[in-house]
Image 1 (cartoon, rainbow, N blue to C red):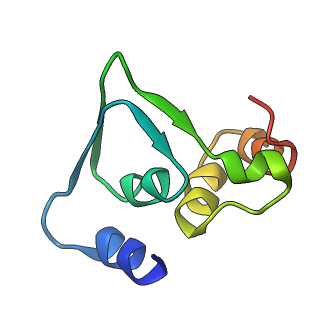
Image 2 (cartoon, one colour; image 1 turned 180 degrees about the vertical axis):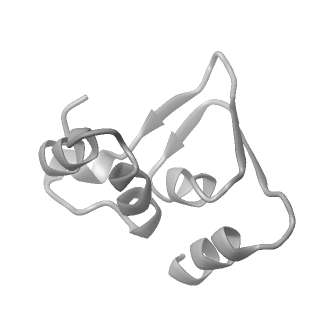
Image 3 (cartoon, rainbow, N blue to C red; image 1 turned 90 degrees about the vertical axis):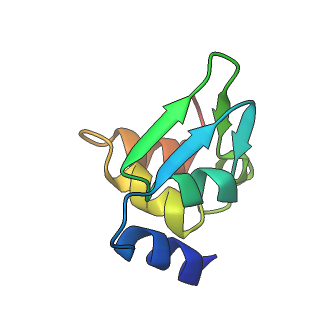
Length: 81
């Protein structure tokens, strides 16, 4: 997944992530490199590994670091929503 996430972030053409239904873990990670992320009204996003004390994957670590202030750090460390 690390190679795929890097490829997506560095891909020269626009990459669009369409997310419908449950998007968790690695699905969240690979969608974060998209220039445009589209969610449906049925979308539910989750990083369940943080709830059991595991560090998010490379994609999750990246997008949590982009959150304003210390929100991403708090989410990664506590797993709370």
